[in-house]
Amino acid sequence: MIQTLSWKASLKEQIFTKEDIREYLTLALISIILIVIAAWIEANVTLKIAKTMLAKGI
Image 1 (cartoon, rainbow, N blue to C red):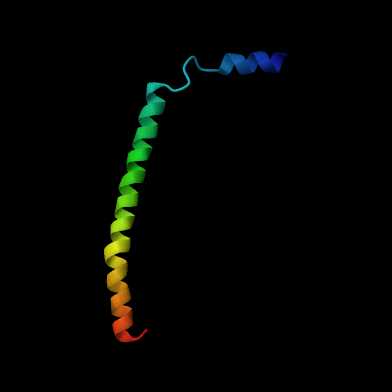
Image 2 (image 1 turned 30 degrees about the horizontal axis):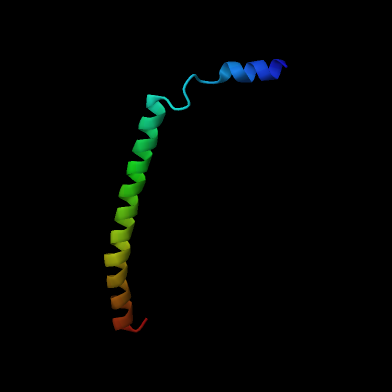
């Protein structure tokens, strides 16, 4: 019973606060930017490396 009351007392009034939403959106934006950078590297840099390796017969 005491554990249940202490758990209920620790609950927030709101599920998500403005700070939680801001942190989530910041992390989502950083993730999207990193995915775009990784895709660019995969499409351009990796292709150049592969062509160089094939030309040298590696």
